[in-house]
Each structure stands twice: as structure tokens, then as C-alpha cells.
Image (tube, rainbow over all chains, first blue to last red; front, side, top):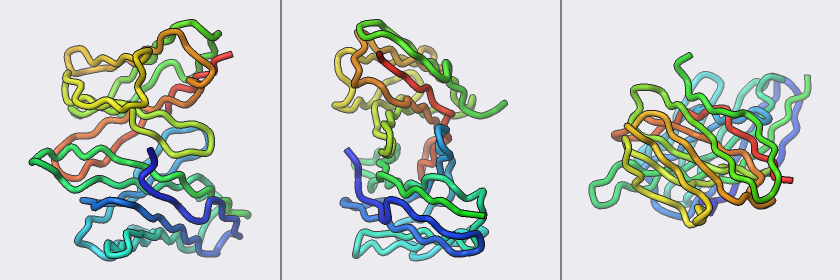
Length: 116
Length: 114
């Protein structure tokens, strides 16, 4: 079953604009990750934010995490046509009983279209 | 190529036939995952291996599904007596383990059951 929901389901913007995607989840987490998927391909890891972090940057990506609201957002600045893809958040649960493998649970994704 | 390889990339089969997918993970990764993704949805967890041991199976993995990872290297996912509802992308991923679990995915194997 899906861990949470992503909002919006689809987002269409012009090149150069910023794109913001939101993710909500249900259970306590160790970390939250964002992945990108080009049409019909596998997923590529973008960025990870740990439960004790509030904000993280990587290039044009900015991720925030609010554990009290169980939500995260991904901001892509100065978007490019090549950013067109589906974006998924994925949560790793808090470690339990000493086990650390923590399978990831994915959201339903946001389809981003960037028009040249 | 040091990424995760999956084969075949596409498989079209008739209902009732058996199919098998293969995944070759990154060689130094001891954890291997299978996920299933249907159109418009995020990946759903199917099963997980640490080395050769299958440590968790989702309830999505019915008796018709079996996965193996002999010798802790490549893995196979077999679906017996396929049904139209099995049509999906089957994604394999691997990770190095310990701490934060960042997955490296293969390109996926797309199954179409007619």
C-alpha cells in the first residue's frame, strides 16, 4: 500500500519557473527521499533528508521536512525541459528492533511537465 | 556497466503462461528489492533479500509469485499462471545496506498479459 499522498498529481510549467511538489506520509520515519522517473524507466535517487533535518539543498533542488505535520516538499528552481518526469517521495520507517534495512514506501507521484 | 540490470525489458505473454524476470544488482550491494508499478502509481514493495536470504514478502506476492537470489548475487522473479492483473512494470533495486537505505533501480521489466 502507498505510504502517503503527493500533491499536485500533475504540474505544468514553463522553463525557468520554479516547481513545488508536496508529499504527506502517515507513520514515523527515519528519512524521506525523493526519486525521479522518466517515462517508462526506472527511478533515480535525487535527495535524502533525515528526520532530524528540516531543509536540505542539492543543486537546483531544495527539500523541506516537517515531521510534526508529516509532510515534505520538493522545490526545483529554474526548471528546464529536461526536468520533465514523474517525481516520487519515499519514506524509510524508523528503525525497529535494531533492524536497519527499512524498506522504502513510495507515494503516488507528481507528473511534472516543463514546456520549453 | 555498474548499474542494476534487468532482463527482459519487455515481455508479452498469454494468460496462464509462466514468466521469469532476472535482476543483476550492483555487485557490492547485499540488499535487493523487487517492486511492482502499475500505470499512474508509485512502486509497491514485493520482496526483499539480504544476501541470499529472503527476509520479507509483501501480501501482494501471491502464491503464484516466487523470488530467489541464489548465492546472493542475481535474483529471479517468477510469475506462474499469469493473469491480466499481473500486467505491470517490475522494478528491481539494490542497496549497500546499513543506515539510510538509498535504492539504485534498474530500468524495469514491463509485463503485458494478454
